[in-house]
Length: 116
Length: 305
Image (cartoon, rainbow over all chains, first blue to last red; front, side, top):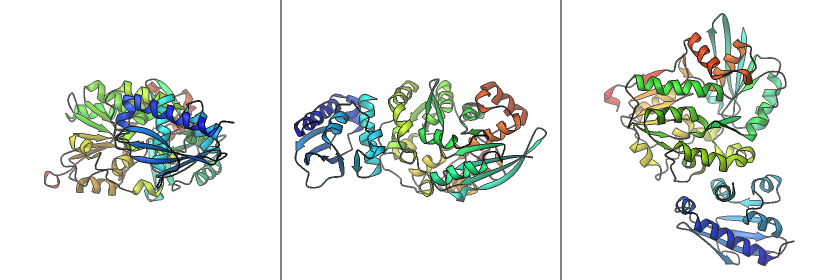
């Protein structure tokens, strides 16, 4: 079972991958979203912020979120390290994503561009 | 008489029935929209299985062919597998021939060629059309990311499309189709996106899926050409009102409607009596030639543009 700290590390790694990818920086340039990442087994929250093509991570729950991504820490860690595609866990309900359908698709698209 | 039914995830407002003659056969064609209801589509395919000669799947693909590679749309394949006896086709075989030919027909009319600026709203589902425009030397914008995912990132080359398709391979298999493409009543929604207007404005020809063209279409498209399919009289009125110069369809005019390629392909399969997987590009070209099928062309008066 992953710790909350490991979830945070995976998010930081994910943000770095996004920021290092020139194509994604352009694709995300007008996708300004605040995403609440909730590790349900630790009840730990992190804020993933996409702003002007840059992705950053902060501890804690955002005051207002455009999307909420919830799963157990182990699964979140696997997803944000690119070890597991989010689609299957999303379809089987072990990953829940609340938000506009197009934003859900955009976040999934980012993982597809990074890891296929 | 051969019986052919297209089960479409689209709105039933586009339903129609026609009879056409193909060689010595009369074919009864029916288009049935299920309004995006996958369960209804599954039930309808099961009910038709073994009772009609071929089934078309509309508003969804089973396969995409990009750069010579096959990509599977999971929801489309699962729908097709509901039929155990009757062949089910999505039009992708016919698209590859008919839509290349449609581009060449435009070139023959002097409406497409080198330097023609083309907005293809989505090209992964119409790779043959995209290739045909590129082979003419047209300057293409492929809007797959814009029109399917809402990302303002145009592709300009077939290589980019090919790379993107590879990245999306697993998603096409598993992402619910309605997230990638409007189904049911959502096909009728028009939500012009100011980020995408420039691509319409800069194009000489807007090509591809009619619902995607409609989705972000600005109020005015003066002097543009449209290359699409599944038109109805109301579609032509919409384009005329927007100031469009001409509309070409890739499928034949059937008393005021142009059907989806899936229905026409299903008709071919029914008449040829060959399993769809055995039909080659040459079979499709031969059939098109024998049937004398060609797309329709509508030119609007100058004063409407």
